[in-house]
Length: 228
Ligand code: HEC
Image 1: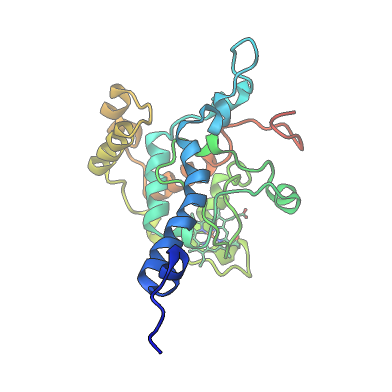
Image 2 (image 1 turned 45 degrees about the vertical axis):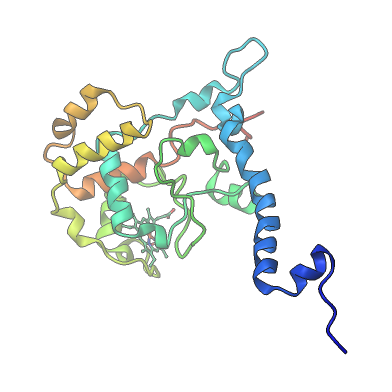
């Protein structure tokens, strides 16, 4: 008996594995598009764009989010270079245990000048989104030189070379310029003054400045949601 010719779309797809794969990819992408595309044009994806009925900013404390200083930006780049993100996330989830441990959950606006953002999900070590101000600068230096001197059971590697490494000013200036090119509001003067801003600083100074800035730009009220 001769095999039936496939009839109808469904039967054709089920008998051709490539057509089926294409169709599956197409159908699944609809879900992605519906979730992602609105984020490109909705105004209040960034919480600081929310306006009160009189047109003033609804949450003025969110205006505290600022670009990193050149020194902090240098620290951030060292954070990327050293792969700190392989063990540390920077996003407090809106779950009770996270809020009790780290503080207010992370808002999108807090990483609006972070390119690329460091949210992540791998946590061999604790989340660092709110580590700024938690310890002294001296603690961070001692911890980065030898984590076990501060936390005996730590598995974090040592980062001893940061202490004597000078900051690469020439490339830092370009990197600040690159941030400006993608929309971070640095002024021409700030870019021109990069070398004075980081004069005499080491990579360790930059890393500590960066860590101390994390999570400190919005002044959240203790135990309160930012919308309350
Ligand atoms: C192999 C995984 C690993 C890597 C890579 C790593 N860390 Fe850690 N980190 C940990 C662990 C585990 C802890 C918790 C124990 C401790 O405090 O040392 C920690 C703790 C910390 C803390 C203290 C957090 C707190 O709230 O107590 C800071 C700050 C920190 N790391 C910064 C860094 C920086 C900066 C880098 C990159 C230069 C880095 N870490 C790389 C694993 C890692």
